[in-house]
Amino acid sequence: MPSKTTAFLFDLNGTIIDDMAFHAKAWYHILAEDLGADLTFEEVKQEMYGKNAEVLVRIFGEDHFEKNEIEELSSKKENYYQTAYKPHLELINGLQDFLAQAAAANVKMAIASAAITDNIGFVIDNLNIRQYFDALVSADDVSTSKPDPETFLKAAEKLNTAPAACIVFEDAPKGVEAARNAGMRCVVITTAHPKEDFAQYDNVIGYIADYTDPYIKNFFQQP
Ligand SMILES: O=P(O)(O)OC[C@H]1O[C@@H](O)[C@H](O)[C@@H](O)[C@@H]1O
Figure (cartoon, rainbow, N blue to C red):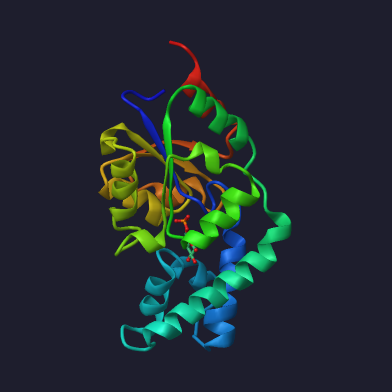
């Protein structure tokens, strides 16, 4: 285990489940097809980080929507996403064993995500992994989402663990940036972005394709 590690903070989308393509399709449906934003599919992929309200404000500007319209658009997007992704819902390879090993080693664990609370429940209850997590932090618990450090700092606080003792698992550059802003090391899972997209971040301690990777399996080997 990397030195002084006592907690793992998991991002959700792209890190617990390989679902970022489904978020991209749901966002493209809302932004370009329903709302007529002049964005390509690739541009939508670049913009879809942070909370749903932050995505909408980034694209349409501060005063474009009323608060209730933002909430409606956000639930419409999650409805598209959950309906399309549900038949494919599965943990990333090796994660079930990794969570069990971490729990047996007394590593505290949290989910720290830009997703709404309902999406976190959709994943961890359908996949029966809620019992592994001592804390959950969603979009609904923070005022500003990733790349702001609030999501990860709140998760560390809930686990009563110092940022330097946390390892974040992330798949998105903006998530790695949030971890860096929180003073945390990061393992990158390359489900949605290649290694090159993280070159600028000095808090990355390793890259994995999934949770069978020897790099993290070795975390639990005795020295
Ligand atoms: O922080 P996480 O778990 O990767 O979640 C990120 C995604 O969460 C989704 O709910 C948002 O709609 C996406 O725009 C965002 O990219």
